[in-house]
Length: 265
Figure (spheres, one colour):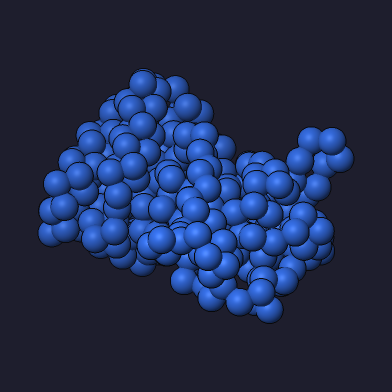
């Protein structure tokens, strides 16, 4: 994801020189995701405590605006954007830290933590290749439907960037695997569904576990990588042109190919 740019938008009523205009809160616009931390929330001061701020940030993390390892905006930026004090922001960040959602590094900033790593490791250890394919077959067609409906031009550009990385990988198994995960995660993020985004992060975690390395070495031949990339390219074009029927057929065939390759190994 490109660097997130923040802008303060001062909401003023017409002729807004009075007290009511001055009280309007300036929402923080996250331009590359469309997520507005303060949208659809009443301006009443009683709603703007630490828990309210923590909820805004929690939702921004859940929607993928701030991915694992990404640094959150500075306390001052958050405070100005949500019309709260820096003390309230610090308390909100403390709440997120207690929940394990962020890590605070003195003198550096606040970063999104990797959530529930131990639980994820347990799932990856006990999930077989065919079980993973069952989950992907259940999830990815719905992702495609939502992407066709909800993807923004910026989402399409992010998917295209991941596709370019896939096509540059040639026969390099590791590079292909990394870009393949980015491609499918970009698709999930283009749904703008926080739970779907988190579900696919879990899928990618299982796919990247060390036990899968031997399987990749057997399955990912240069010929299969080239075939998968042709399927990725066809899927991207169907999504880009909002052709849901074609996209669903392509993703079904893609998953069938991947499942067949696992059965042959």
